[in-house]
Image 1 (cartoon, rainbow, N blue to C red):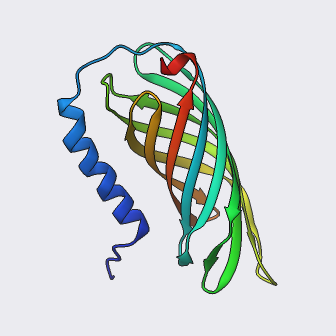
Image 2: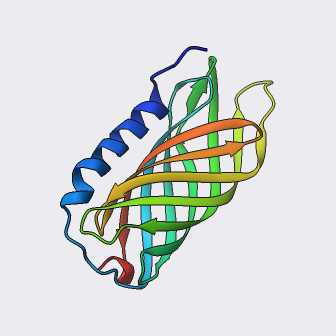
Amino acid sequence: MKLRFGFPALGAAILSLAMLVFAPRAAAEPFNPGSYWSFKAAALNITGGNQEAVQLGLGFGFQFPKGFAFEAESHRTFYDGAANGVEYTFDSIAAFVAYRTPSKVFWKVKMGYGASEINFEGPTNNLDGEGQQFGMGFGTKRFELEWTRINVQFTNIDMLSFTFRFGDGTK
C-alpha cells in the first residue's frame, strides 16, 4: 500500500496544524444563540481524481449556547473536475450537527447525512445516493475553513471549503 500525500491529507494536515496553533491561545468567548446564513466556496476531489471541481454553496444554521449547532447546506458545481480523464460535476444537499469550541478562534467538528449526485461526461455511469458526511475545521465568528469527507456509493469525496457566515448566531 502506497501512502499518497495529496488533497485530503494536505487539507487535514493544514487544519490540524491551525487548530494546534490557534485554539490554545484564543480566549474563551460565549456563543450567541441564533440563526445564521452561510456562503461557501469549495474545491473537491473524488477518489482517483486528477483535477478538483470548484463548488459554490449556501447554508442555513442555528447556533445553540453551549457550542452545538444545526446546519443545512446545498452545493452546486461551478467548475467541472476530472477523474481518470473524465469530467464530472458534483451536487449535494446535507444536514449536520456541529460543535465549535468556545473561543474567538474556534475549531469545529461536524457529522451529518446528505444526498449527492456525481454526473460524469460521456458513457460512464453516474453516481447518486445518500450517505454520511463528516468534517473538521477552524474559524472565527464570520469565517471558517473546513475539510469534509462525503461518501457516495463507496466513493470518497474530499472537500476543502471556505465559508462566510452572517446573521444573529455570528454576532
